[in-house]
Image (cartoon, rainbow, N blue to C red; front, side, top):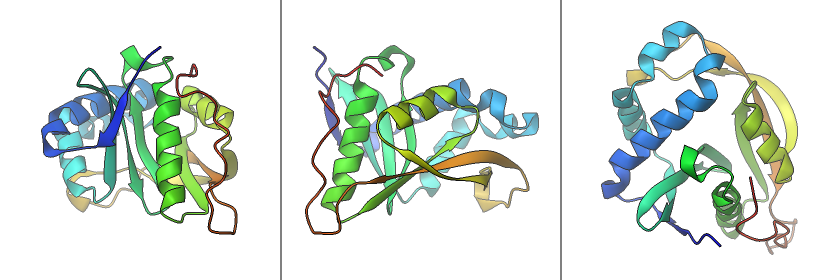
Length: 181
């Protein structure tokens, strides 16, 4: 049975997060964006992107190696990536459960996350985890240096109730932390 450590990211995690993010983004999104955007999806761009993030970032590790991460910004779970070697091990479910619980503990009633149309693996995973499609939107693609982008991709915005309207978090219905994803 796998055992992971899920903890806040530190400055020492930066290189591993950038490498995992670069790999994961290309695995999931390379074929979904206009070709000219790929010039802005090299490792150095993910490093710049990370510099611009004000989100809280959390990593999932096994024997010290970072195998996944997510970030939180307000009620939104963003930048959710799991290394190729850890896909299907249950780490994604453990990270998502952790993110949901963190939001609920912080008072968030309704969590949000977005998934680019065509990222079928992520879409199916989120739906298995109880996330519901709220709307389809056109999302602007990031460019370095805060430059405005006129490039957009169709995106699904999902929601999930994390707390009832009282002050208590919703009961954990996710099952074991090592469920297959």
